[in-house]
Image (cartoon, rainbow over all chains, first blue to last red; front, side, top):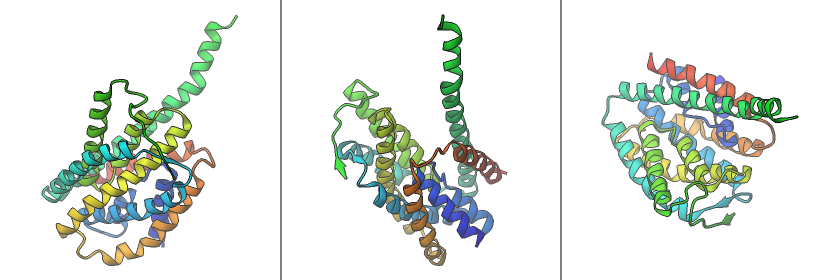
Length: 134
Length: 137
């Protein structure tokens, strides 16, 4: 039950734009003993279903850019095929470690944006007030 | 849904550079998503954010466009995974996760912009750094 609750939470975060970064892969590996490559495949399906549902809510409010979508999509198509082919032909243990590296990188990136937003909002204003008023 | 065209990206003045940037960011997002089954979305959101502009509205548009793009790219990766036999015995798990995915995605989209997500992002960052370390060790 806890697993399904946490999986729902992952989809909520994804729909909110916070991101889920494949936490479901970790949950599947740790709580369900799923093999790493299968967990990645399940995560793809999970993401697709949750994003269809999120898009259904978003689609009326947002602008879509077909030209950018098409150009980025063509590049993405090549990248996806290459990436998936490489994943299937690489030692799953190595893929798991790269996956762990990606999670750490994403986490550090999110933290850095939070810190820089905080500095911009609070410290910069104070610095300008201190040095440029009067 | 409104369809718009942007010939030249806001953040990149040169047309050729903008085109190269769009193609390369697509390749990188697709590659990471195909290799790791996740993680391509953050690249797509960042790239589209750079291309569409820095207003709050543009950021939300970037997210929605990235979601649509990653939906298509995930389908391509998924087909390759299925052909590789990775998902042969996972039908039950996938079916059992359909309701959490549908429900969670809709609730998340509904909650978007309704409250400040900074605390949530902080917790999320710590959780994924910890998860990453666990996956490596």
